[in-house]
Image (cartoon, rainbow, N blue to C red; front, top):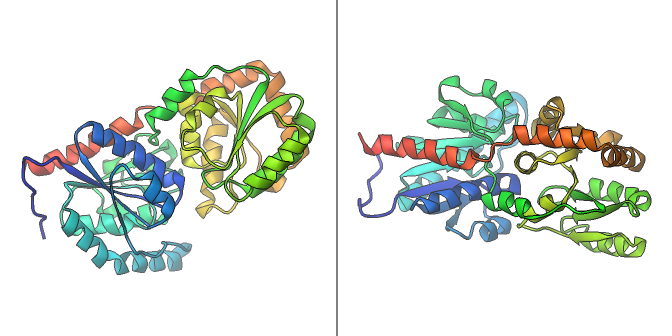
Length: 366
């Protein structure tokens, strides 16, 4: 059934389906801001988590009561498809209520049903995949999408070539601008982050390593909520110089101050690191779906932009050795910064919005 066109004098409306972790939400937020600059009205459909409601406050927000698309192999695919189908009536109802001119999905289990429903209602639709290895939601919804945007060249083989384009991963312009405003000063500054939720494994090893490094480096540590209090107390006892906080949405300034990044290998973090041009030590989360964080990190290692330490091999001693190497070998660190910058795609947001708007214009012109 074709959708009803809204009145021509109203602003065009985009529905962005996202949710879950910051890796899905922040790229969606970057695109929403670009749509709004161009006079579009933005609606979000997410998974109902509180973090989504706060971060996506720039537009109207609705929650889709869908189950996670999880599992491996044929059984996982069947279960994921069933979860998608069960959420379909609700997704169709949301689309009929909101009447968007365009639907853009960023993975997560809210995205799949919205893309399938938009195909049924013949609404222009596209998806974006952040990681090297596509998530189940995007793999299931790709056949119904008219365009597929990916962050890495290595992802092209997973989707139909005729409708897939490497755009990079959207990074909020404010992150890049804030990083450029900062001046890097001595002492040598290390920025540690384990993603939007933090990483207990990384936090523990870093705190141990700082017993030896505290007189040589200044630390910026985004800990996540769970470990903030004990790490704050521990660093105060050790006399660690720097900044410690659970989470900061305005992350650009911390990238700007840092000489070196120690982090997980989520797609968004890597996109930000490449756009601001920083050397990094990556410790991929070992339990990520399809081991996608290792695959993400391997791309950066292959291009000489990062070093990687698997969590199973991560020790305070090994981390100290890697930090001291990049602290003392400036030429190596500067070369890694150049390689990281060469991987950056700071215009990803604009390209995705441009290509998505083309879909809407083609439909209107029929």
